[in-house]
Image 1 (cartoon, one colour):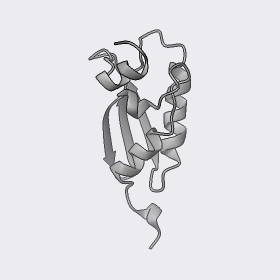
Image 2 (tube, rainbow, N blue to C red):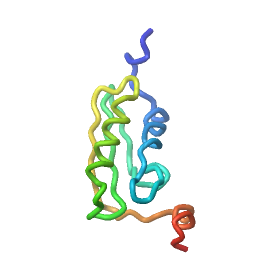
Image 3 (cartoon, helix red, strand yellow):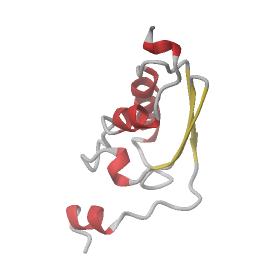
Image 4 (tube, rainbow, N blue to C red):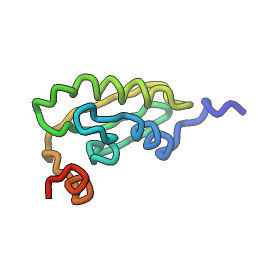
Length: 102
């Protein structure tokens, strides 16, 4: 049976998101915690995400990268990316340590 006939798994979506790198921080958006929610419904993947700041110059590029990489996952028919700044992004302790923010 063709795998693309099935909805993609959450894990396969996360693996795709881990390949999207923030061009300013050089860390992937999953690790950075920029993904707030992933909903999968019959091949449609809805992703709620944020940027490191509302004025993030890489925002449009990040959104396009998410749509392209997630869209390439077998079983994905459509990708919908919603950008939100509620709550504002707050780096985890691990991210702060890597970025020298501690």
